[in-house]
Length: 230
Length: 249
Image (tube, rainbow over the protein chains, first blue to last red):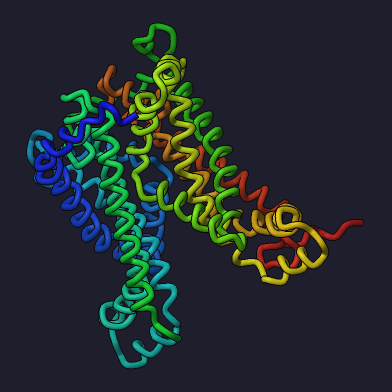
């Protein structure tokens, strides 16, 4: 089975795979997570507000994102981002956007829907008394949220947020559909150039497996460390 | 925005010369549903088996189940699709590999297997959590009545478990439908792939993707509604989710 297994092709392409591919994958994961958490938290606050003009659009956005395949959304944004850019910058032509920017926008906006649901659960897990106490102290809404509710909600949800980030890390491989060179894209390019599909795809699977498993173990460990004993 | 809208495009003939664009999207929907449906059967079967294994008193079975779940959960679905589609035919004996490659609709079968096993790891987690949420007494009572361990699972624990985990199973089923779109990378012409093809041939990007999006939303609504009906039918009396049926005559 492994008689003509060519380990050399993996060794030869290691710099390309990691400098080009993995850098892209990790950078995309980190940026999309940070952006997603910020926008997701805002969406969660919108969904939990008293005003229908805030809750309805936020809920519609989140439900839309959650009922459509990620691949379809990647295509959507790939074609939509130039027009959004044109609309924002008021330029006469659709904006030329690089593949990386397009991916970051796509993943941020898509993951925001999922982070929104996590943050919403986090905020709802805070005892009502906290809100009442903050208001009794005369805090305004931004102060209450910024200093009382969100820090606690965030802390409670750190393990879930990190787990979602691991899912996101795996999902970045889907940028393959718009021919972007992430880790899998790089592996696939080498595989097709050298006709070494077996070696490259098995290696890619191993790398994803090791990183995801290590990360999820670390999250479990963290979860035990930071768990609040009530 | 200088985009040229053309909504009647759906009724125009697609490049295959037989179907309109609308019909090609419908064909894609059928493939999506077929793939998700078949994958769901595999996922449910393997997921239940592995989930049960992980709650048995046998250490080796628990360990085996854990390895299975970690393996399928920590490799991206796209990579798993590639492994089944490109790698498997190369590493099995040559005759079998050739047969695999020449199979008609190979991408469909590959997608079903890959998606089914990928989802089975998630379902195993749900089944395990469901079984562990049952009171310990249920298992003990089953064993005390003289049922064997498999019988206890089959007649006591699992009927309860499935009812409890209905809501997460619904969202896993929706995930299966959504994840079937990944199969376009191995050439399955399901809904997203058809929308993409339509965009490539007609240049009507936004019409094509809008149509696909709406179809996915409609599928979602139907599935959610159907699952809720089933949920209500099988709800356990005495649990919070149970609404008593109207009193009979």
